[in-house]
Amino acid sequence: MINFSEDSMINLQKINNTDINKNVEALLLDGENIIGVYKTIRDQIVFTDKRIMTVDVKGITGKKQEIFTLPYSKIQYFGIQTVGFAELIPDSELALFFNNGLKASFEFTGNNDILEIGRTISKYALQ
Image (cartoon, rainbow, N blue to C red; front, top):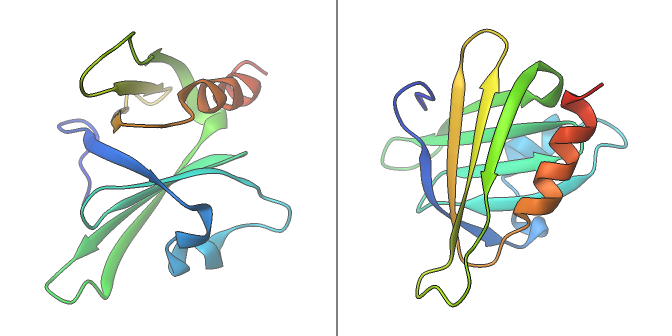
């Protein structure tokens, strides 16, 4: 299980939206739009216009997966760190704090949509 209170998902790299995990795709609601899909070596995180979905791949074969949904409506506050100028390894971070005390952290490398993700979270968290 991804333990959000202890660890963060690190080295998330942007991938094509069509490479979304098939189990996550099956859980998407009608009209739910994908903002961005990111992956580590095996795990995946999907940002939609309504929530964040994480996939923790288990075992040698990877057939067993734990999928968690983090609705934007439950976020109390959040913070982002954008990529700096002329960094050798461009990275950015997202920290989410939920109204039940849960914290989720994500570290992205390379090209990403951190500002669009932040704008989407603001839309739902500030209502």
